[in-house]
Every structure is written in structure tokens, then in C-alpha cells.
Image (cartoon, rainbow, N blue to C red; front, top):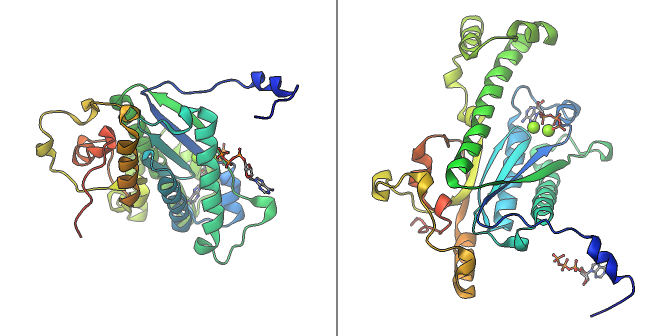
Length: 290
Ligand code: ATP
Ligand code: ATP
Ligand code: MG
Ligand code: MG
């Protein structure tokens, strides 16, 4: 071990380990994507290529980090969820956040040309992301967090769909459309979409209405097979950190084998969680037979 008189400066490094046995969510968000989306000509309100690219980057991160349980993305943001049992980097916040942010950014930039072949990235306008880690004390609150993001997706998408219809189809200016939408509720926007533009919001793509859920796929279970336990009260009987090394390694291997899928489904209701009990239990399920 090298030892020098400078070694003491280590004492200035503050520990930032997150609390044990809590859900950790790392949420990343594109920096200045409003401007960036203009610069690279994203289609409004929803550019499919940009969303597909976000999802491709999220899949890369999920594959790279088997400790991740699930991720949820909308617009220029993604939330990555670590199970309470996760011991990666001794749960050090900065390590977890920077690993996800840089892994995501690298995958996003690397795959950009695949999704925007005619729009090469410019050094003066590179996509970057910020990130933070938040802890949630139990599965019920974790689910409320996920629901919060999905409700936000719905609210923003309804607003954006209406706003951009008024501008792009209705010929209004941005200011006029914004003014008219001020103080309106959901039903007003649905009505504007339907009566003026013949758009039934319910028929808009699930991709835009629900956002994207990314997780490892195992055999789905019938909700009744799970019994009377509600999805959010299911607890793990033993923390993975207390399992032997070989058991931990086995779980990691099982996770690596599983297929990472992207879906646009409701994650607010119980059904999603009941049919995928491995998400909250942290224990891999059975690999589906092809
Ligand atoms: P900040 O740096 O504070 O996050 P921002 O400009 O990124 O600022 P956000 O609130 O994160 O602001 O909003 C992201 C914006 O990026 C959206 O409002 C939208 O204009 C644009 N955007 C992101 N994804 C898409 C997409 N797939 N299609 C069209 N526009 C998009
Ligand atoms: P961790 O993920 O924990 O940071 P690490 O493998 O990155 O693990 P570090 O302590 O960061 O370990 O050390 C970086 C290592 O990378 C060095 O020990 C060296 O082996 C290698 N390395 C970094 N830069 C160079 C370089 N320019 N030329 C050769 N080797 C390098
Ligand atoms: Mg942003
Ligand atoms: Mg955002």
C-alpha cells in the first residue's frame, strides 16, 4: 500500500452511503432538452425516434446492471429502481448515480446515429443528463412514486397533444394556444381534441399515453395464484446480502439470462405488480419457455 504524507486528504471525502433496506430510485433527466429537441428537429409533441433512443439507452443500462429491478421512462427522463437488497457500491449514492448517468449517456450518444441517421450530433449540442438518488422506505411508497411519474406522463401528454394540435393543425400561434389552454381541465382538452380535430385521445398510442416500462421478463403469474397478499405488502424473507456468495451469484446469473423488455402498460393498478411478483420480491422468476 502506497503511503504518502498527502494521504490524509482522504479524510475530506464524505461518506454518502444510502440507508440499508430502502428502495433506491435514480432519476435522470435530459439537460435542456427543450432546446436540444428544437436543434435536432424532434417532431412535436412526441418524436418516436427520440423516445425509442431513450428506451434503447435504458435497456443498455438495465443489461449492464443486473441489480436494477425496473425502470420507467417518459419524455427526456428515466427512473431506475434498485431493490432494497441491492449492495452495489455499498449503496454509495454518488457511485450509483454517476454510473447510471454516464452509462445512459454513453449508450444514448453511441446509438444516436441509428435513430437519427440524417442528423449527426454536433459537439456544441451534445445530449447530457443529470441525476439524483431518492430513497423510499417501502414497496407501497415505491409504487406511489412510479404512479406519480405515470400520471405526470398522462397529464403532460394530454396537454402536449392538445397544444400541438391547436398549433400544427389549427394554425394558432404558441401564445394563443397556451392562453386558451390556461385553466382547462382534462375533459376540456379531450373536448377540444375531439370537436375541433376529430381526435379521440383514448385512441392515441399507448407508447405516448403510458410511457415506457423496462424490466426483466420471467413467466407471468396469474394474479389469483399469488393468493391474498397484495402486491405492495409482499416482503422478501431474507435480504439478498445475507445470502451466501454462491446464492447471490446464482441470482445475478439468472438476471443476466432474462430478457429485458420494454412495454407501454399501466403500472398504477395492482395487476401489473401481481403478475410480476419478482419485481417487488427481488427474486428472479422462471425463464419463460419459448
Ligand atoms: P431541464 O434541463 O431543466 O430538464 P428541459 O428543457 O430538458 O430542461 P424538461 O422539463 O426536462 O425541460 O422537458 C423536456 C423537453 O424536451 C420537453 O418539454 C420537450 O420539449 C422535449 N422533448 C423531450 N423528449 C421529446 C420527444 N420524444 N419528442 C419531442 N420533444 C421532446
Ligand atoms: P473501479 O470501477 O472501482 O473504479 P477500476 O478498474 O476503474 O475500478 P481504478 O482504481 O479506477 O480501477 O484504476 C484505474 C485503472 O485503470 C488503473 O489501475 C490502470 O490499470 C487502468 N488505467 C487507467 N488509465 C490508464 C492509462 N492511461 N493507461 C493504462 N492503464 C490505465
Ligand atoms: Mg430535461
Ligand atoms: Mg424532463
